[in-house]
Length: 399
Image 1 (tube, one colour):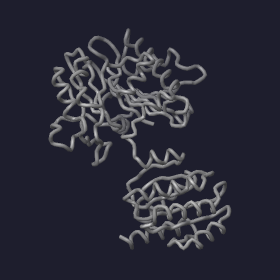
Image 2 (cartoon, one colour):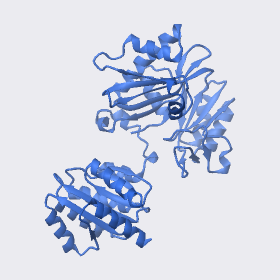
Image 3 (spheres, helix red, strand yellow):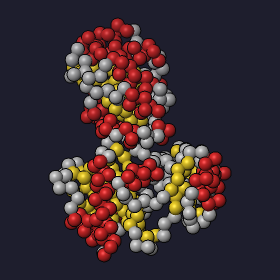
Image 4 (cartoon, rainbow, N blue to C red):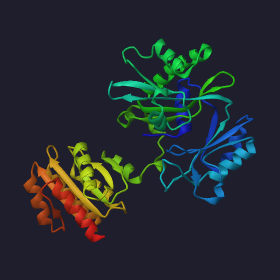
């Protein structure tokens, strides 16, 4: 689960992490009062969307002005005017794609007198099963490009969960960033607090870009991006309360209600599969035969008829879907349950596109018989390769 920048800074503030003060608004009528709360002399107006590259982004609407999604101004009046100008507009960045995202929230923040910019992030390192920190002197830049062009400028280290943060971790960060004296001490304190926040809130990723040194000699997190482990959200109702469903795909929200693993993609063939590995193989083989998947959907090993029906409805609700491939290997999941779910869904929502069904495993003959007896216009398949070729052919013929 992702949250907005201002929310991320609120979480970090709980752990004593130094972040600039600011006020978030959801309505243009709040802009003047919010800007007046910031003392100046510099105000920063930031579009709040779940995507990076906001500063370099462009608005689709002409009345949003030529500036990007992050603006630095010199008065409260300008701050309020800019906030009003961009609220409700569509911001297009390198991460949103051409469709962009509507700005429903704006953060008005105090400006910072920046001397140096750095990069710092924390994430779960699967190789070591530990929380790893990544730091670089190249703050404010695309870290992937830094890793590609100048990998020597990126430093990483992991923290043993048995000991937690130790003094040498702070020294490692200070040395990597060229900090000494009081700034080195601040770096040690910062790592300790960020690690506490990461573990305490069950984060999956924490990125501070840039981490800055002000001309007054203070380390400050000027931007913050946080994502949480969705499997741990039941332990953090305060985090769940931060969820902004307007930033998420409506189909993914609906899928989460049924505990379905669903991710919307940009292809034309809807997929319903059980098991993440089989789902990935299904997506790959669709691409192999010249089409693209419209989604990743894993109904799980113990799905009920209700979940299967819900999954099918979610797939058919996508206007991009021109064909559907159901690929089930029945282990715990029984093929007859899948068959009944598919039939129930088709009867409920209708079937306007080609449907290929490949069933194998537990109760496979019962499942196939249920589909045959249903009278549905379903294309049967013997194996995954056969199923992929048939759905791609059917989609191309229907186009």
